[in-house]
Image (cartoon, rainbow, N blue to C red; front, side):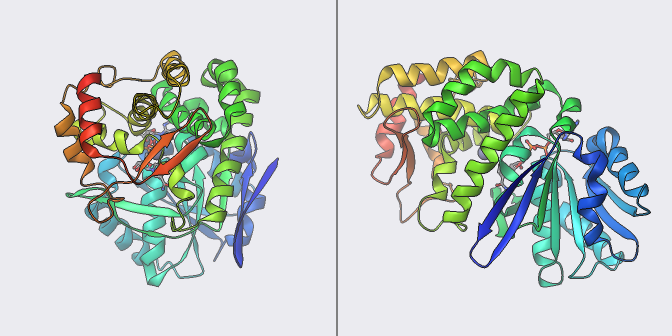
Length: 366
Ligand code: NAD
Ligand code: ZN
């Protein structure tokens, strides 16, 4: 069992990582049981694939669960999805001291986290992430949100979970494409500030993607520690440190917007292409070597992830993609801070990027 503490000033919470944790979750969850029950929010796919493991482990300790099973997919993370969930939680009489369990990927984690943030002005919640993306990224750090017609994650709150339980074996039932998409966020930590970890990814990525338990456990722990450290330094993205986690996301969000946030391009796939673009743009600006940019693209491509506009299935021109970027949450007084790189493991926030040069670069990439 690996314990990673997340320290936030006067508060802290634990991330527990262990193969088979879902089958032994009772010991960790017992302190949160109220009236003999726990409310577990999940989606239909996760309910079919993983809920029985949690249920059996709790039942063995005499703890019942009240499941709330939502439709899978990004559309559940909406005003409508939030309203339905809030009404169910209120009807169940959930109180502020209750801890609502989010069992699922980033969609469930973000939605349940936001519901917990505003239900009775804030109640507790526990993350049990079941996708690689949610295990290495979204379950840690307290960003919660829903999507609106104006865009993704535009309505939300910072609300930290009280506990995160990560069972890497829950990934055994996750479709391979979803595993690959989550892997993009793993590679991201190496590219941000850990060149050795990127080299580890180059050597071990294939094993990780095929479910090798040792590689998987190492990558999850390494990612979670990296994210916990960054979040501890800059919980609410005020100093710029946490912004490093957005590497590849400005380009990526433009690709997601262009493809309509659909199954055509998963978030992690967009981030993969976005990171490859960020490195090539950095190289084109003379900031980073062309070799490093090529290495990034080659590794993402070898992992089965898109590393170019064409591979991402996007044919829009630079002006259209930059127009999407102008809707970015990170826009500050008409400029958009970009995550650029001086090399692998040397990402930095650049507030002086000229969007015309981004458009020209994207036209050359097309
Ligand atoms: P997801 O939650 O939609 O899960 C992907 C698919 O896998 C779904 O169909 C789900 O039902 C299924 N699934 C989940 N676990 C499974 C399992 N163990 N076995 C079988 N099927 C399983 O997608 P995601 O990639 O986990 O999360 C994406 C969301 O996360 C986006 O909405 C994104 O905005 C958000 N996100 C949030 C943060 C944050 O910091 N809060 C960070 C990154 C991404
Ligand atoms: Zn992401």
